[in-house]
Length: 67
Image 1 (cartoon, rainbow, N blue to C red):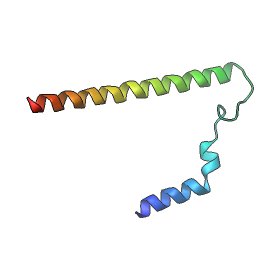
Image 2: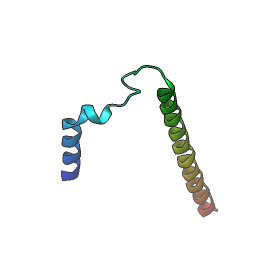
Image 3: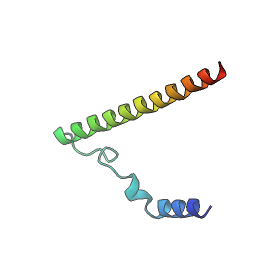
Image 4: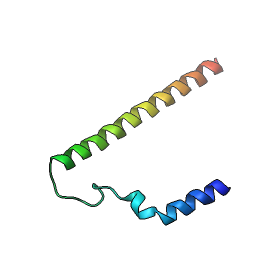
């Protein structure tokens, strides 16, 4: 419970800097901004693929254990 309160306190105090990123502030268009957007999309895609793999792995073990 103390950890949750500490995390919530830090989040409230430093909320604005933690949520700040160039994409959120709509910086001027350029090669760097395009690269950053592409990097964010790639990182999200990799995360989805890895989590989907874990999900399929768990479902497979559950189905095997029921047999």
